[in-house]
Length: 120
Image (cartoon, rainbow, N blue to C red; front, side, top):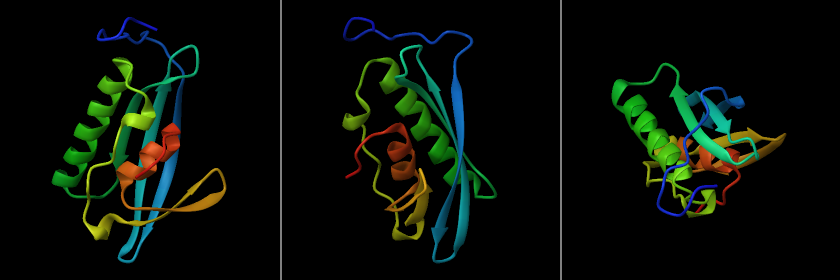
């Protein structure tokens, strides 16, 4: 871990896990691929988020948020301190995480849950 206020760089090769998350919404399913890279000690270090078949604006918002989360993690911000942005109710639904159905308010909240953080 690096001193507070400095960025802990990622190695060029790192362990990454990809999750396919289906957000079941009232207007149909939204498939999201979440990639999580880890440091050698297992801490999450980077988040990739890609929504399939959604509009450009929504995909851009998801990519920008994932990049912000990645930079925060690399600067040592704990996952528990990262919050999901407010989203319209249309993004809420249910996801399956570790075999358990979990209600979420957005794709962002689903990503935070997969990173191991609490959601508010």
